[in-house]
Length: 282
Image (cartoon, rainbow, N blue to C red; front, top):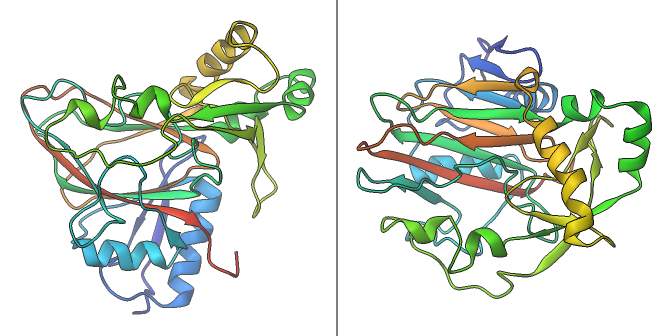
């Protein structure tokens, strides 16, 4: 399907754009996919409204952007292991994704993007915040930028996905998958260079970053605390108010996100696919 009516509207200063005139459930031609990818790279997170995506259609859409991830610690849908159902029931007190993070930074090769679809949205609350880590890096002094570019950080899923963690284990509606390496540690640069733009972004996050490589946790704490506070500064953020049928696609290489937990007593149902690596042409 060729989309000749695509419109891209910027929604905030640091990141975010809303795209209209595209039916994501239809097979999209290469030019349309390319335009969406370019908008994603430029704006870091893009939003769509009034979509009707079956799990099959969401998988098909995600596969146009690259290979899909099967989450190692949260069971996917029956028949669609690439699709994670993120559900908070009215009686649940803890939500999934309720803290600033970058998806899958705890893997040896972190995911490059995520596609989230709103199935059932509460009457109020449940927005998602996004923060540009490229803008966060660019706001630092040249001296600190140079220092950070020489550092690596250690990431792990153990804090979130261990039996004592804060994630899917706390909800009856989300099944935890058994997997090895839940407390494995993997090292990534503190500053990532985007492969398509060359733009630099901070790549640490409160959920999965444990310490600076070669430093103790005690030594790492002051620097990481400063970065975590700096990276969520409101000038680097945008906020998305969900409605049923909305879609968000974000670049995990340069974006944090935070699912707000402000809809007590209501149900929220989302579906996510995560992209491990881009297509062969980049």
